[in-house]
Length: 85
Image (cartoon, rainbow, N blue to C red):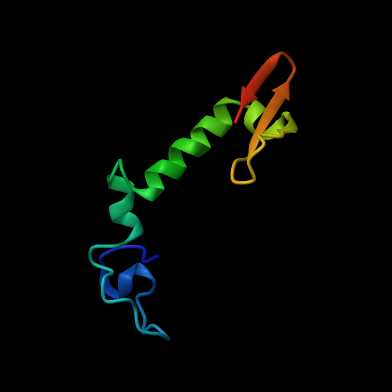
């Protein structure tokens, strides 16, 4: 991912050792941060949720047999909280 629309896609002020992608002026991290529908924004929201809900990362995990090999389901448990995924 290019960093910005700036010179050399924001990687360096010197001469890059490989050519930067031609689309760096419209596809770059700086643009993603300002777009609420971007992949960056999506992951930012997920990280905030993970920080807000310790259950997501610290809870015990119990896999559930769904009867379908294409579906994964599990239950996260932490103290009195439960989360079905």
